Length: 66
Picture 1 (spheres, one colour):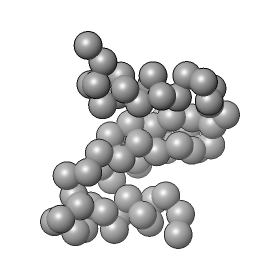
Picture 2 (cartoon, helix red, strand yellow; picture 1 turned 90 degrees about the horizontal axis):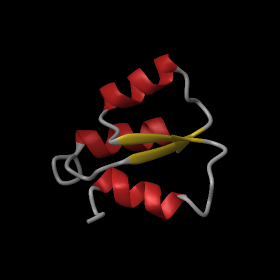
Picture 3 (cartoon, rainbow, N blue to C red; picture 1 turned 30 degrees about the vertical axis):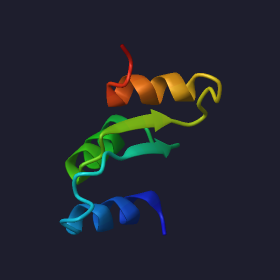
Picture 4 (cartoon, helix red, strand yellow; picture 1 turned 45 degrees about the vertical axis):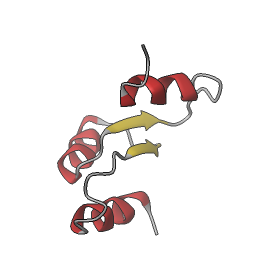
């Protein structure tokens, strides 16, 4: 299952619709970002990404930083 399909399934189910989804993708053009946003993705991180910076990015995106 690809990420778009997984995101659609999460959005279709009332029990999982509220779960924040951060997409890791090589598709990061403006049209791709718009599609992911329309599907309900919380954020989009483009590949390649910095593995060491990823935890801090997720903390920031989710508002977990103080």
